[in-house]
Amino acid sequence: MTPIEKNIIVVDENGNELHRTYAKRAKGLVKKGRAHFVGDDTICLTDPSGLHEEEESMTTDLTIREIFDRITQLHDQLASSALSLNELRHSLDSALCNEVDESAEIVENVTNVFIHREQTLRSLLDMYFVMYNDLKNT
Image (cartoon, rainbow, N blue to C red):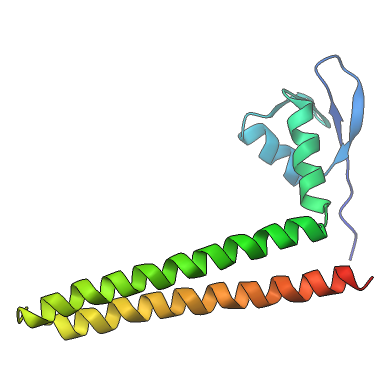
């Protein structure tokens, strides 16, 4: 199996060579309007600074602070979800008292959506705690 090579030269608007990339990535940049072909094996970026930031963000690991911030955001979402669920249950209980057809099934389905959302957020929170502890202990 032959490894894929970075055989497309990437240049800036002044013709300065920046780096090489894969053909598939080059085609994607052209398709998105972020570059254009100036030769069979060369593309010119329309905004080289944006590409560099994108590649850098794709390879940068999360810092302890970023993980902590994400944990805080998830905590807030979980708290908000609990409040919303209580409000929803109250509204749906009122609907049940008014004998709305199929309201019990609606209550169950909507409650399940909130429960699954909360489980997902808690799983994310657990993952971030593990990442945070791993970084903190290194």
